[in-house]
Length: 450
Ligand code: HEM
Image: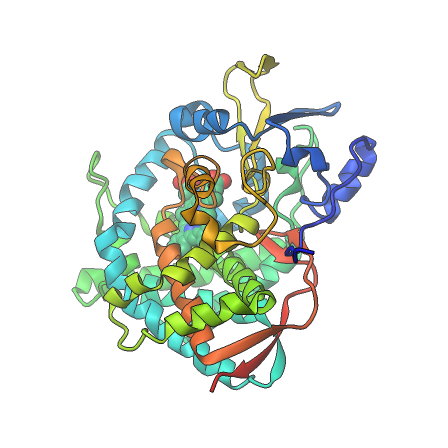
């Protein structure tokens, strides 16, 4: 029998709204019926709202690529993140969002990625050194990858390692924030009626305030260094010195704080999730682990050019992003009436694009639930890579960190497996928190490689 990696159970097709809400509170993935892996479009009706999940690739393209302005980010999904992220690029729409992207995008262009590579490499070396202290034990690997991904972000953004006092404080406080606000805002998929008041717990608000105070200090210090001509050439300096090509304005410190908060959150939560699942899959499929480890031997000098040799690691990482996309669903609002698949969609309806379902769609992918990094070489894999693979979204709102993440992920995977062997301890159950995580963590037995 084929050994398929873990997939959450689906709920029965018909359940009461009440039961749906309860399942939803528990986990957004297992609250869905199995038919979403076969349907081209599905409608969810409740007394308060209509949502439509789209799996038909041309409709996904319409929403994300062809007419993104007509499908803005749903206000409702923003609610849970607003205390922390303020008016960051992740939450804004319209002109404001466009201006923010014009300033941010140049920092992530190809050439700049090469400049950030030494910082990623250094973070990778530190992750290896930390893991060495725990070799011979069962290790909760999401913790390891969170630490490593946070280190990458601090080094590339602010040129400081995670051991830095401020970086440590931000990292710790983010964990508290996530614990107090653990689920990717439910209201996104199951929007509450507008009249219902929203409460953030006191702890959520307090920890958002603390994080923002720390980031403000770092950003103000950087502004002073830029003014004095002593700032390091990193992502923060690049973003804070790039004027909007249309208005000539720079980000104010306050606007920059919003952006740093999202870089930190979007950049480290997602990469940590993907890397943890990649390591789990390597433990589960040891033949692949050996191939990645073998290939990783060519990483010697820390030169950017070595990355081009990590072909297997990249295929493994992409296959991980397919099976466990860190951002499982994206929600948009229809800003005008639409007609999709002969159905009228009212203005204001929620449109859900689900990388989770699209990536495992039974009518699109060959053998969708199996782990097969060679699929990217097949015709089906190539077609699906273009049409049905959107771990970083697509179109105007595509993740600006996609190129960054596709270097960071394979690099850290390779550096860790070059020095360590990992083995399965138990089977994780995927659930959607802020990103796709395991319900009870991912434990792996780690030993040093000879
Ligand atoms: C494996 C790693 C990553 C994955 C899977 C990922 C995925 C995504 C996805 C799916 C979105 C779109 C969300 C939506 O439209 O609702 C997004 C947006 C974003 N990501 Fe990433 N991301 C990753 C890493 C990063 C990194 C490393 C950074 C920055 C250093 C970053 C910064 C952002 C920002 C700023 C946005 C908002 C863009 C906008 O709305 O215009 N991400 N990411």
